[in-house]
Length: 112
Image 1 (cartoon, rainbow, N blue to C red):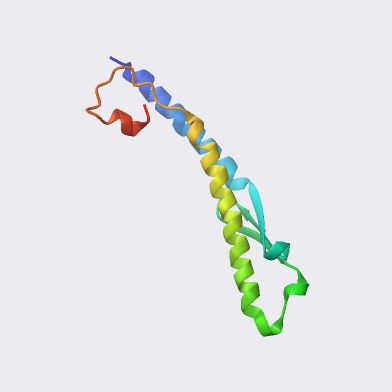
Image 2: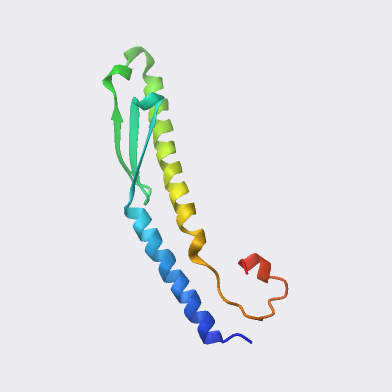
């Protein structure tokens, strides 16, 4: 039978590590561009858009919709970088050592 105090300590350590990683990710900035680099967006892992840079050459008064589409594409690509960074940082936290605890078939769902 696993030691419940040990399990609780492991869970608390995992939670603290996840919170540390989430805080670090929230402060990190990510950048992506669209339209061959004519629009660049910088975002934070917290979800804040930091900046959008537009090459003046792409500003056509007759096609303002194009710039909007490029901004959306650049921002979405930057947030995709955030998601990629988050998924690469979170899965290696490890799991709880359930050492023989009968979970009635739930063990596989918990990653053990």
